Image (tube, rainbow, N blue to C red; front, side, top):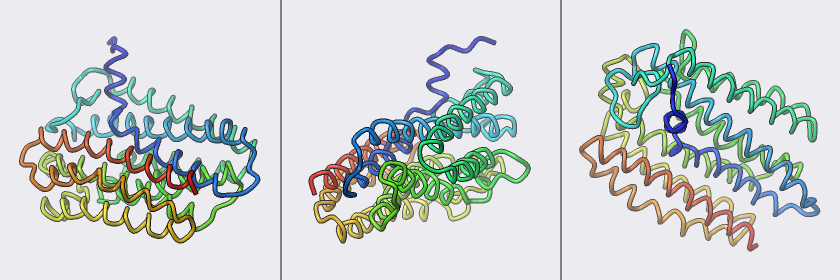
Length: 294
């Protein structure tokens, strides 16, 4: 079976990649508030952190595609194409793509560890294990409604505070607030995705948080994520007043919120997913700008 490059790119779910980019960007911005950080650390350490984050996101996407595909979870789903579920690629090939992506993340992480601290090795190992067991293994926690917790911790706190640490050598209140901001924005992306898939996930036995709490409350959780984003910015303001610029970015989520609140079709929720990804980028950009102009 030959799968085109375009199909593999679509299978990597590019709309989810802001969840990997934003935490590294704002983690690097938070590092600028620490004195005496060499410029090359932003390029080398920050660049490696971005490679690790992107590779992990892509690896998780392929691993999710493989695991859901072989379980039959994607047989009834709507929304963006899935490689295994659609028959565009064999399960074995998608599994290899996931493992290669995890390998890229491992090489990048090992390089960062050699430049900073070897404690990054166990952190990276746990991150990759969590990425695989999200929907893989005998008891995937994504099927138990714990996916949002994984996303908040690893694509929020770990990715953001970790970026600040490898660049500036410290983790402080600002980096934790920044990580919380990145985390709730990433969770919003997962929430709208799972909202769209409630019916198909319920039918296949995938008990996501959205399936557990239902349609209406899932929409409320989505709105809550942006309220928590504003709170995280407020905490950051305690250390850097100009971080308040991030609140301007939060306003960019209003169209996405309105769409999620009113959407009644899968097509509308697919559009909301794209709007959520754009809002994530805009909020991250405004917040980072606020940290840079301190």
